[in-house]
Image (cartoon, rainbow, N blue to C red):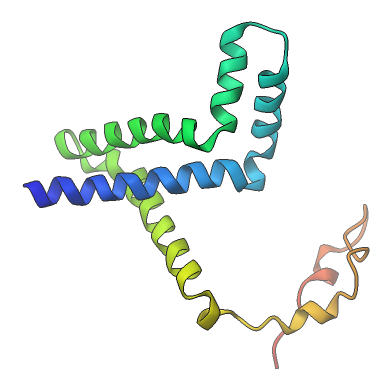
Length: 139
């Protein structure tokens, strides 16, 4: 029983790390980070400023995300395993990212298509076909 709980706590820790990492670096959450920055620098109500600061500080945010992960793991153990699925999903993703970071020197995929786009000005403009900018097929 103790090893089961310890394993789930490790999963919750990995999931917390991944969730905070995705929020702080993912382009999907850029609008939320911008909103949090506006909140943290506004002259509005103090709870709004604190919420903005909480979201912008990875250390602060990790405490609350960890609480949510532990609750999900607890519900997964007590009620139904379905509650633990987000924790397992984030933990596996974090494990994969850690492996990629550790093995980066040996596992880099050659990107010969980097030379196909000579400069950063070759991007999609309105009306351009996005397929024309995709990497060429390997021979």
